[in-house]
Amino acid sequence: MRSLLARGSELASSKEQLKILTEVSGKLDLPSFSDKLKEAALYPLRPTGVDILQVNVGKLCNQTCKHCHVDAGPDRREIMNRETMEECLVALATPGVNTLDITGGAPEMNPNFRWFVEEASKLGKKIMIRCNLTILLAGEKYRDLPEFFAEHKVEVVSSLPYFQKRRTDAQRGEGVFDRSIEALRKLNSLGYGIPDSDLVLNLVYNPVGSFLAGGQSTLENDFKKELKQVYDVQFNSLFALSNMPISRFLESLLESGNLEAYLEKLVTAFNPVAAAGVMCRNTLSVGWDGSLYDCDFNQMLDMKIEGKISKISEFNKSVLDSREILLHQHCYGCTAGAGSSCGGSIA
Image (cartoon, helix red, strand yellow):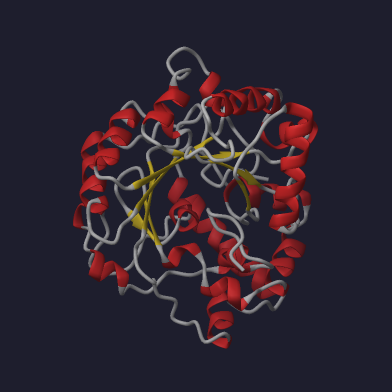
């Protein structure tokens, strides 16, 4: 099968992915996501207000994870420049925008990353960093990042597919689990994830395969028990995310012949309560080039927001708060079961 992610044709690949989801849904006679929202009296879907600015500062990463919807890796060259970061800071300073959520790739590999965090910290807003943990051990350039995070009270959100080595390495690469545990211990030593500390460390769980995440609270208890007993590692909360049927995971579903079954599973598990609380309603996604999207997943499918504003340089909160959110079949991934968002389960 020709790779969906052929380099140099990212836009064409995005269109192809949407076409595949449409064709498979039609073949299975699955309702469109828009129709499902109409049944739940949620259409058209509109924001509750831009509270979180989620900024992708680049696709460069020291890992190549099988489930990565960003298709990040060591060979990517898309990097946000300082001028675009400055435009993000202007938007962040807007009253009502309370959180900066920095993501990638490995965002720490952006040469202006530390400057961006320092400037955001001066605004007094909450700062979150999506850290893959292994970057903290990727040479002297990054080894003092835990101290840098602590200095600026950055909330660290880190992916750890499971509390066992075999399942984590199967999704993220050989040796990733052991390096992740070492990085978590370093963060713990500074107070991250420790009870009564103001340094927050949250973990992200993704299923290893074509099934939905289990109950978030049960998973959190299991993770906390095993990581503490076996590795003496602590953390605050666990976010359980479903894998979205796009990018590398879509390719995996196609190659394994599980796409039809997975889409049916998502549609069958549609939860209107989760749909009412999807993250695109309070989050604005910013691409590495400053383009605006309703969410990180729409960004990877090149589904730019519709309307007069298309770039972060044009940020206008009142206009963006009244926009209509773009939808497609992949949106079922955020509304199945207890729902899924960058902050974990919704319902």
